[in-house]
Structures are given as C-alpha cells and as structure tokens.
Amino acid sequence: MNIKIHTINDTKIVEVTSEDIIINKAEDGLDLLGNIYYQGFDKIIIYQKNITSDFFELKTGIAGEILQKFSTYRVRLAIVGDFSKYKSKSLSDFIYESNKGRQVNFVDSMTAALTILSLT
Image 1 (spheres, helix red, strand yellow):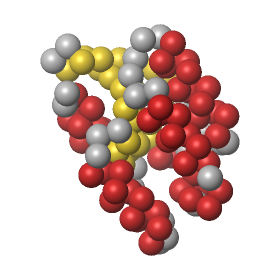
Image 2 (cartoon, one colour):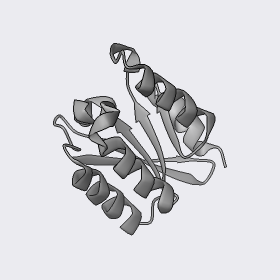
Image 3 (cartoon, one colour):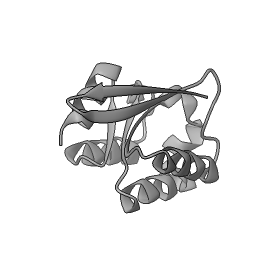
C-alpha cells in the first residue's frame, strides 16, 4: 500500500494506492480509516480496484459498516472508479444519494476526487 499526500489550498488529502485489494472485509476498511486518521488526515481517496467487489453488493453490509465509521469520525472519502459495471439499482441509488452529500463520494477520476475533497 502506498500513500501520497496532495495539498490543495492548505487542504491535505491522502491518496491510497496499491496493486492489490486493500479492503477485503469491513475490518480492513476500519484499519485503513484508523491508520490514516491517526496520522492526522481526514480526507482520503481510494480506488475501486482496491476494494473487494463484495463492498459494492450492498446486501453484504461491508459498505454500510465501513462508511458509517467514516461518517462517525468525520473522515471524508472519495472512491475513484467506473461504477457503471454494477447493475444493481440499490447501489446506483446509494451512489446517487452519497454524491448529493460531502461525506462519501463516488467519482470517475482523480481530478474529481481532489476537487470535491478540497472544498471546505
């Protein structure tokens, strides 16, 4: 796992990358949150390819458990990827509703992630 820090208008944003899946289960997401939060960051970018596909199956509860913790600790999260391959209406609705807020956003590019997370 690699961590890169982006600074935009005095806002520090952490980009997490890897060649492997970083989040396989809810505990992995909570560990990531804890590690990044402990280092003093509250804005994180992660890529869809680094998250298990089970996350995007809402009935597994993985997404709900992880995103609830991000919300509780007020850590903003942008997930970058192509979500069109998931045909679930409930996931589409979830992404739509998430993107109306500022806590968790599903975006299609790194530029979009940096833009949304740099807004105060």
